[in-house]
Amino acid sequence: MSGWIKICGVKTAEAVDAAMRAGATHLGFNFFRKSPRYVAPDEAGRLAALAPGLRSVALAVDADDTTLRAISDGMHPQMWQLHGDESPKRVAAVRDMFKVPVIKAVSIESKMDMARAYSYEQTADWLLFDAKPGALPGGNGLAFDWNLIAHETWTKPWFLSGGLTSDNVAEAIRTTHTRGVDVSSGVEKSRGQKDPALIERFAARARAAFAESMK
Image (cartoon, rainbow, N blue to C red):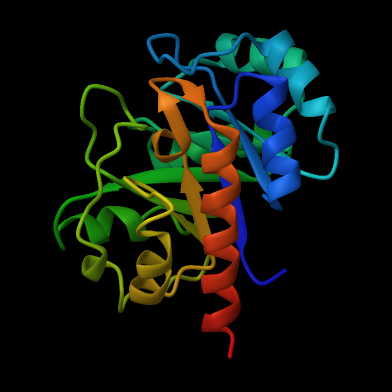
């Protein structure tokens, strides 16, 4: 696989089908209740079962153990994505609790955020770089200056997120040299509603850019 493509905030079987057909590698399910992309754990489990070839990712924001266990019981995620202010110690605790890989999302606004990002390398299995939160912890359609991370070296695999669309994903991959992209609002026809055509277009352009970067 030349790169990872994660479609996040999936709520419908139609979106799952589109992600599979498009060649995505990861499906993200959002368990932040204030998000228009929120899905109940049992429903997320049903949807994830429709795509056994894709890695299911449970996105949580500063959730306590009881909430995480309820999500796990309903969905049995293959990965966790912690998208709040969780400390490195909390990341390690979640990893130990569920014995599956953990992605830690880190908001990037300036070079000062690099130290915080590196602090998670000891406990997270993956990193995800996103723009500083807007109205929601993620999925705001906001991008950050990709040059801030373009020349950094990470010991863990990582996703680039924040404001990605089919129009800019190739440039994002060329600029940052990322091997993984994460998209939510950039493949929606309205807030929280995925557009299969946009999913397919985004994935096709990401795959082409990944292939080009490998030459």
